[in-house]
Image (cartoon, rainbow, N blue to C red):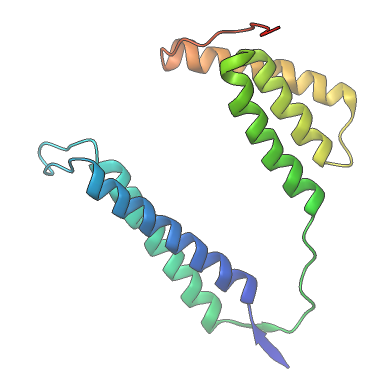
Length: 152
């Protein structure tokens, strides 16, 4: 017996809705301009449309594709919660503690989501990503972030 790929259908619908929301928001809140003189809303609107179309295509291909009926895959709740927590930690720490503690918190929390991660690899990855984030934000993008400031 065959069944449709319902997880792909659901993912496609979510992606299509997200793309549509981004495109509509950008088109209504920013000046799109013209092709010769693009406004600040041109890129996010186009990106939202592209994401929406890709979501629709994913939904259609998943609905038309027949796969063998399998049991629904289990969701790794531990990883999902820890990765979302790491994003929240970064957004809280970037303004209060600085760039380095925020990156270290993201890496450490996300690494804890992986059962195979070791302390050694987490420390090395934290150091490398902290330096990389500093180089990208400071020199490539010209943004000024506090590197480290303890709020206590």
